[in-house]
Length: 399
Ligand SMILES: Cc1cc2nc3c(=O)[nH]c(=O)nc-3n(C[C@H](O)[C@H](O)[C@H](O)COP(=O)(O)OP(=O)(O)OC[C@H]3O[C@@H](n4cnc5c(N)ncnc54)[C@H](O)[C@@H]3O)c2cc1C
Ligand code: SF4
Ligand code: SF4
Ligand code: SF4
Image 1 (cartoon, protein in one colour):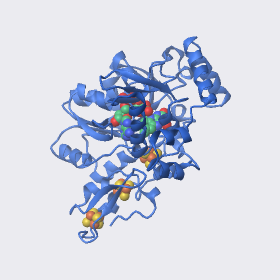
Image 2: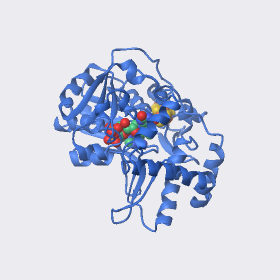
Image 3: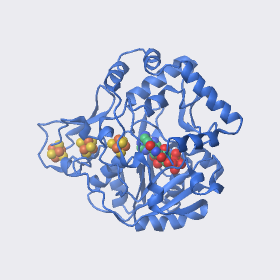
Image 4: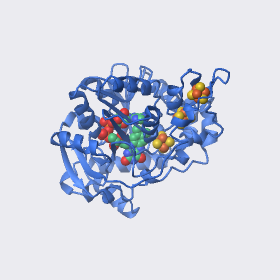
């Protein structure tokens, strides 16, 4: 029976809860806002299945295999604008829908909590577009996927690498009709912190927040913003990584799931078919692709993935790249984020402090922040933002 003694040993995928034959495991939210399995010991029949399918307990080695690598920009400008990077997810998911399949991804509910859901039409896919930097609840989607696959249906499941390995562990055998897409994953922040942030913004902006985009291309791809929509669906807030307090919390590693600080899924060779992520230094690959509208790096791990890619490439601008070059220096692919020394106190405070006081205490909008924002906006207005960022990346040796 699964028993979580060290919280770093559970990524919250829900695989154990989905597999339990007597339904004696349920996912419960802890004081930090993260889900963990809790068992009813009396009902447990000691079958051992929960341990067998757990992706953390069964995390495998990084075993080299053939890979194909590309830069990708989806040709549909509206979809590319709505997508975090270049629209690779929609390109793959769109193929699945055209074959009569079903696609799973992370979407908001009416309270802007993040859950995995199914989409069966191109219109429904829009809800999955946009990275939500908060942990998504997979609920019973793994069981639903198994039902679809057993009925012979094509299924695409997208998520963080631990969710994909959780799903594959749950399924226990390969399915030809399953297509998996994972992202290069920095980490996932606490749903509780996200809830507190929305509470603060709703109060400050005097409206119910109805939608949120963590990576809106308001000022272009290179300077993406947190953008919020009001109760009439109108944009009521847009601030970049310099100022927005949720983005600052995300990038300072102060509220991530404990397992993210010791992630077992940071590796190049994955069990998924596709790994997709950002490409900021697109100019280093091909200057003609550098239009500040978003580009994906796509790493294909399987023959199935390569065959699907052939079906979608016409809808995209693609550039084949050497896989070693595509993955070189991608820190988030290989290294866990370092836990902030403020994490414990921040999450304790998040559970009880007034939301505005909380965010202002840890992420004050002071003179330094205002100056950075002014400098970024100046660069954006004068059209030198991308060049300035490129120079900064060179100085920091990020490219
Ligand atoms: C939590 C998180 C951390 C990331 N960290 C990095 C990073 O450090 N470096 C990097 O280069 N790229 C990172 N990415 C990937 C990047 O943000 C884009 O998601 C990726 O490039 C796909 O781009 P797209 O244009 O195809 O995406 P979109 O069309 O915007 O697709 C979004 C995809 O992400 C999935 N998704 C969105 N939110 C979540 C969530 N909370 N949990 C699980 N799945 C989700 C959706 O299901 C969909 O498949 C991260 C993504 C997420 C979700
Ligand atoms: S050992 Fe079997 S019955 Fe017990 S919690 Fe795990 S899956 Fe459920
Ligand atoms: S990692 Fe997933 S399968 Fe393992 S204990 Fe946590 S929720 Fe269960
Ligand atoms: S960093 Fe690792 S453990 Fe955390 S969500 Fe991403 S893949 Fe899962």
